[in-house]
Image (cartoon, rainbow, N blue to C red; front, side, top):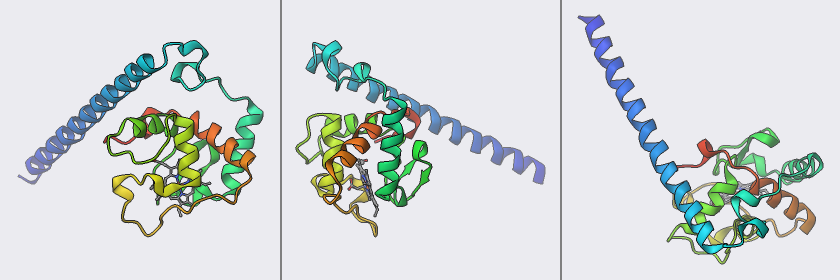
Length: 174
Ligand code: HEC
């Protein structure tokens, strides 16, 4: 009898887990398609636009190293997880998909800032974090402070590093 109960439990658990995964994968796919459609309609000369997803020039090893050093020096990782920088902060959104997440935020009708590109969005989030605070983080004990004291080269290295983080599984489902 106990064994039967256990089997039932495992089956229900499997259905819940599998069901959940499919829903997530589907909504991420829909969102990514939206981003693609938006980009192709708003940037007809995609090949020449550095902001378009497919035209992002990969960073050099040196740029990656600079970005990682800048990110770590500013202690972003106290709150954020960013695998490439080896940080595991848990008080703030994961940044392994920050390039995609930035594009998603711009499409969000609730977005309240002034950015029009993903790079602008990331820069704005660093210098003026209250321009847009994602719903889930509106009440937090660890709000993001503005990092206006950082030299602009450090900010730009971080912006470039984050813009190139495009891990789909790290992007939360809205
Ligand atoms: C004290 C914790 C804390 C630190 C330190 C911190 N952040 Fe944040 N960050 C947050 C929180 C909380 C949010 C989500 C609310 C918001 O958008 O302001 C956030 C949001 C962001 C966003 C927007 C993400 C999104 O999902 O829209 C970016 C980009 C960002 N942070 C970059 C950085 C960078 C780069 C640094 C280091 C220079 C940094 N953060 C340091 C707490 C922190």
